Length: 359
Image 1: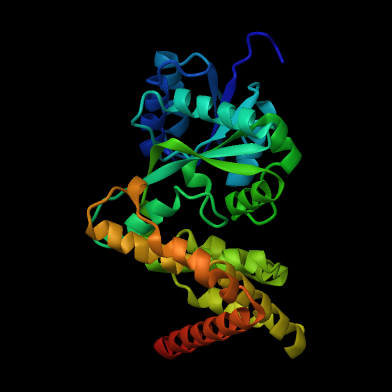
Image 2 (image 1 turned 180 degrees about the horizontal axis):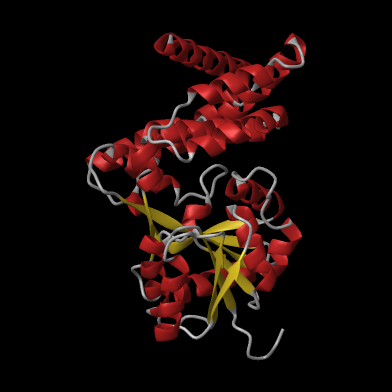
């Protein structure tokens, strides 16, 4: 590491992000008293003015902006950026991120170093709380719930939209982002961080576009996210082998269609016979049981929303009661069996209704 190397490397993957990247780089230019940093924009083959915008802005406000080309795919792009980064710390941000706080990097840097000191090691990753930037109205309580979840340090609550800040050493120990699927890279590295280290929530927040939810449908997108996380958690690899093309096709559609994914899950779960299929569904019941706390937290968010509390001030009384009185039962053998039955019933009802609708 050279003496004049920046302390932090900020890696931003782009693909036709001309409408968003300008604001993010301007926000980074306005950061005050931050650690020394470089910005690495990793482009996956943009056909719009993304690169022209980045080059113009770098001349105006940042000297340390590096633009590199990569094969498309967020995991591939972020790994490529990490390989050329010269900072001891890495921060991965999506191109549609907005930063309002001019001291965000300064504060986050202080907080992660404090975590190092308190824990006595650097197997730590930090993430920001999230606010969604929306073009329309509706689903206010649902967005409130998802914004609240981004402030928790629980499995399934941390994704790439929130930013990921960790040391280069820890990132390399984790093996970087998983490039095998073309999606799920943030969920997978988040899970590995829980297994090998610890997450910390930064006190400040960032903003991201809700465009994908608004185009595809919030309920459908979050249902698909939950299904993907469940299949990944139970290691139903055959599903991902079959579903990869279906997932890629969905990125260009308007309203998200869950039916192709439900069909693939059904086919994959029973592909090796009834006995193995029952084992897959038993594991799914376990995954659902481990995430049942979200129902209690959703009720807390509902009440806090009604009281006009900010997402940072949610009162989690029901979640505390769940952890104290219900969690041990829900995650027991009996609880897992019941959650398996409920999930199985929901899934096949959804699948059947979808087939009826299309017939």
